[in-house]
Length: 230
Image (cartoon, rainbow, N blue to C red; front, side, top):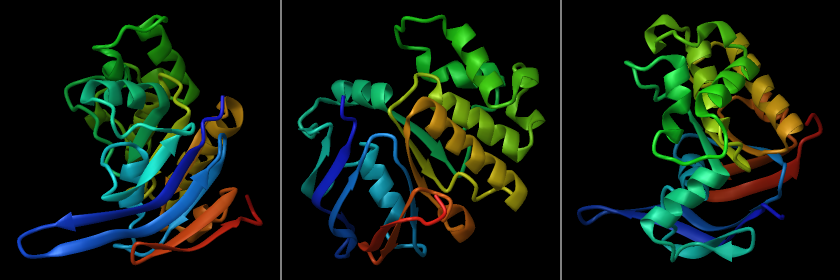
């Protein structure tokens, strides 16, 4: 199946009291199955807004986003949640781990209210081992380093094997060495699992390692090109 995403003339406007902000302006871009794409640009360029729309966390003010050739804008809230669960994994700069849950429990959290065809605990153990945290299953977030917490967040994002991983500044709170390790982990998941990765970053060194680089400014795409290093 073609798990592509296509943005057709999408714009996003945020309206406040007598003030409106055009965060995205007439964006046309496609993402193909299995791609590793980095999105770069200064703060306020629209990177995170675009990622939010791609992840169905918000809807465009104008235009349409097609997932596998289908427009899902008319899905009801519960149907949209099901679509997101099956297809999209999120990784953020802030790890968003629940402080009273262990690593294992945090990874299992997206599955608590879901019926799945596999053993939830066993699958959580497997993905934690995949990200190098086999010995941290019962650790609380406060007992983990920043890099370890981000790896738990990645394990949580991949536990249901989504077709796309959307990563919003996932290395932003980490030192450069740890950020490099997190990037390499995402790259290995991309290669081995075939999941597409859309990676928003301020780090030009990491951005160049992706297969494709999209540069944004003032809500528009300035350039979209293959990386010579990816």
